[in-house]
Image 1 (cartoon, one colour):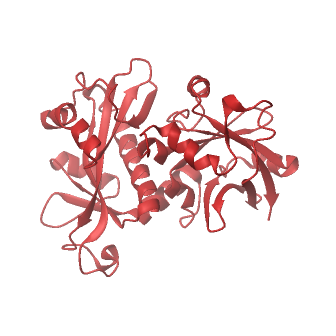
Image 2: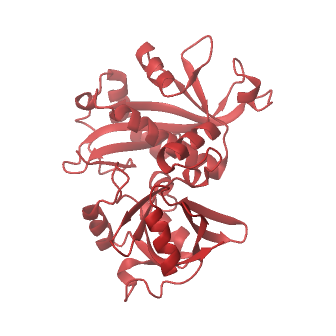
Length: 323
């Protein structure tokens, strides 16, 4: 089953969704759209790519965390409320329980929180477990219980570091790409076209609320153009981004918004052949997409072709520079 993670919108059919908790089902069907449109929470749904059926969802909201029961390290020395994010809802369809997708749904939440914190700040992510089983679920994935209740927390910097290590093979301190919410995929032998998926844009689109509009807004500044408007395989897509080879086993594409800001995207450490190719050729074609990468981290060509036809994919020729 191919699953898409996307912001809740009016076209999603919520009625068939059934988890094992009646209150979570009712909230999705009766309250989710109101909360999402009002801005009191941001709701993301998982849908079956083939049927369009919603099979999972979560809702997050900014919050202030009371310092009671937290260690000084968790509080960062603060005595008052600590800014963070609340996992307000999280539920998976009954038919998918026991498949391991619950952990993937939580990972989706944490990637979104890490991306939001990189932009807007935030120290902790908290959740109020609905029962003992849910409490054990969050504890299993590294959340720390707060004495005296069903609340658990995790430090966002630790979350980002863990995701960086698990998904990118990056060192614990190398979390900039994860915090920016970017995923990579590589295709196109032997040219090694680099496909970058922009996760926070999909979850937190601005303006019209369409993810591709936010992609366009951000990357137009970098010289990226919509694929449909290019005449010759991105050869004249413009400057404004470059690739820096940090070590023989680690490359980074750096998209610079200005002299004081950059989005760093590490290329997988297990692809030294790709690093060698980029160094030898001196350039790479880079495409930016919002939802064309599957949950295995690789390009879904069908989705990519669909998004390209809709004008949701942008691209540029990126120069490779060795430090």
